[in-house]
Image (cartoon, rainbow, N blue to C red; front, top):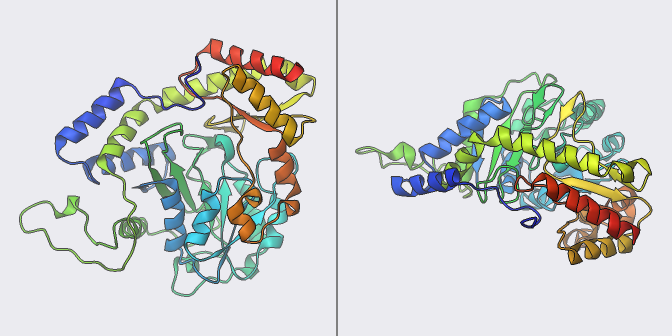
Length: 407
């Protein structure tokens, strides 16, 4: 049995960590959350990490800290999950969607510059499947049109000479590109610890930031961390942990903000997961290599395309294993998914492009304007990839795919 498409890898270590947190008497944001943040700094290489309730909260907080709101535009890819774009709507800004490069899951960086206007205040890029985006090309395009960037006065935007870049790194914790970890390629980076992610806290996320070489103004890390904390806890200037001790009850609400903090129960689970994360990443790399070998005949005869997860310059976090079935229509792809399901092989599709979804149709988007994203989606199938799979499971999936494809 394959244990489903993407079950969490939970051991007794995680269970005991959560039990210990429950017994400690401290279950909301507290010492374990701060410890988790420090441990995430080690894996990302960044100076500060703020743990939050979700990656969506992290993305939205980045937009709000940048002072983005009504009248502004934020560019993201048409080929992503809704969270990458819904946060733009949450802050009152207008989402602008970029088509993918032909044959790619990443946005078309050559088309990006043409979408930038004086209203553009940020770009949200997506590290699809755990592969870090080509941020070098993305930022080069933004620098080519930096004369169009008009930072809103009195906001953090004034620290930038070009449109700020936010990485939706929900898939890429632990990935490396050009010698730098995920978290160090964009101005702001949001991670996800949802139940299906490589590292889980059941629900949860984090926001980090990094000064890139083309940004001459250094970040004030302590100020930024404090701002994120304010945004995560109603604008309260002191959290429960800092109010411990005799006579330390007093606090202020400096602004009417939001509620999206991480709890110590979640952080306890995350810390246990982090202690195993090197091994979990290694296993994911092994599983991807097994898939690559098992499917090599289909790749070599041009029946399918797979996604490169590593070469001499990068190693992904191997979060998803997407394939594309050459020559298949959307109908053909769906029929193949049904065939595999009948053999107890769970698969998925990542993703239906945003312009195909009702919410984005209502905003005026039409999939006809994003032909590359549609082609990428129409014949894509995501095969199960998780650390509860054994080697034989990979061969089972590959054999079932071959039989379903040829029959």
